[in-house]
Amino acid sequence: MNVKVTPVVVFLAVSFGLSWLFALPLWLSGGLENPLFIVFALAMMFTPAIAALVVVFFVEKHPDGRSRRHALGLGSVRPVGRFLRYLALALVVPPALILAALLVGAALGVYPADFVHFSGFQEMLDGQLEALGQAPLPVPIGLLVAAQFANVLVGAVINTIPALGEELGWRGWLLPKLLPLGIVPALLISGVIWGLWHAPLVLLGYNYVDAPGWLALSAMVGMTIVIGAVFSWLRIRSASVWPAALAHGAFNAAAGFSFIFVMAGKSFDPLQATILGWSGWLVPLVLVIVLGATGQFRAPTPVVASAVMPANADSSGDSTGVTESASVADAE
Image 1 (cartoon, rainbow, N blue to C red):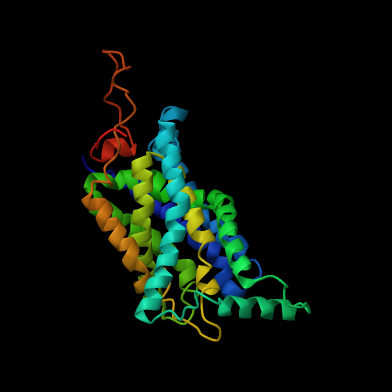
Image 2 (spheres, one colour):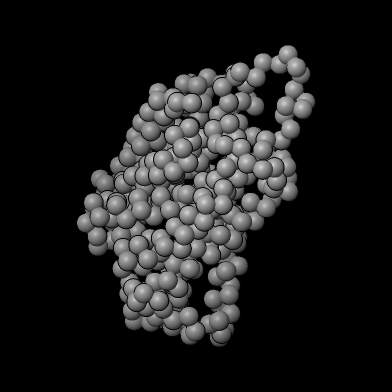
């Protein structure tokens, strides 16, 4: 099966074009210091979804709502047990990978960690309260750290909506279109595309403040390849875009862990440490290799469609679901 080039080219043109358009006010005034930075950054997150909708409605011209939902990864969530299982994994795996990145960074000496007294977090809270003219909170720092984990769960759900703006494009529509190339090329290409799409912000200093633009963007691509592969696993195995969107939301919600566990008075280079740097990619890379070696990037068997399809039904239509593009695994 060959990849249809025209829909992919249109998708990339719209998503990248709109991302630069929405980021243009930041380039014209203030950069990351622009008071409306969050607004423009959130608007950017919806550009892959807009691009996917443009392609689905005007390029592929799917005939009905069911076909369009299927093309975007918004089709059936049955079997429900499988869907819920991957939602649970989506909520847990990304924060676990972010924490693992800090542990690896500390072990390699590139992340100055304080996993016992949380001195950096305490220092940050005291500074913020002092700036507001308030006394330090009479609450044990360990309890405040524990509250951050609860905040991640809440934040993951809230972040799922803007994250869906990206995931409808990257893993909902684009990934199944690339799977005919093979799982490894599909993961690499989609990861590179996802990383380069961040260029309007990364080149302004987002995530990698002091790095040269080319190096910052290269690091972003490295991160999006390994993390994008994890999100792709959730998309393929659940046959739905929702677990990938929830995982993206959980990932964004847990990104601040690096400031909770850092040692007071110390700093770190995001090119070296945290999930943004090379040391943070090691654990997710191992996870992706293990998933690949154990066949976890194969699509699950579709819900018994053939058993209920009339014998004279036309099954030659072009499906864009993951289950057609990837090889079929055992039923779950």
